[in-house]
Length: 178
Image 1 (cartoon, one colour):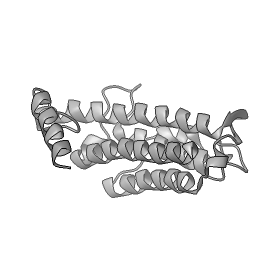
Image 2 (spheres, helix red, strand yellow):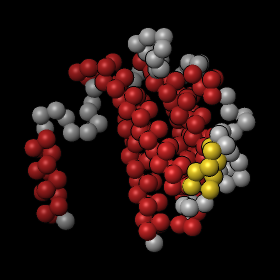
Image 3 (cartoon, helix red, strand yellow):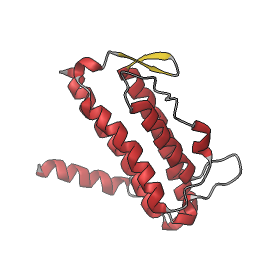
């Protein structure tokens, strides 16, 4: 029972992280998706390509193969070669679909099973938590880049500055009415 509740919460959290990325992607132009502050930094496009490659590798056949698939070319994920926003969005969605399909297929008894990532043993809960931190980290980078590029045109993805009290009151009013 606790395992099913954990899976429900994890799916909810991954969806929340994805929505932040989706809303960032929506706000950026094709040109902005490829911007980076310097040669050592990643653009949003590269972050998306890397995340998708990671998701597909980690979450495909988790019980029968290592999470670092032989077909994965991680270094290639850091080459900015996806020109269109549509193609980049498709890459983004493919990664998330792979992750979510695997999570949707997990049962409570799967959570303590062993899987491997780069030959290192993890239980499924540990792998989920590892990837949650990884994806949240990268989506945070995407949001930060988006805010830098859009400045005052950025549409806040959370509580806008100076609006905390108003937001809290709205939430309290919602709970009263439910």
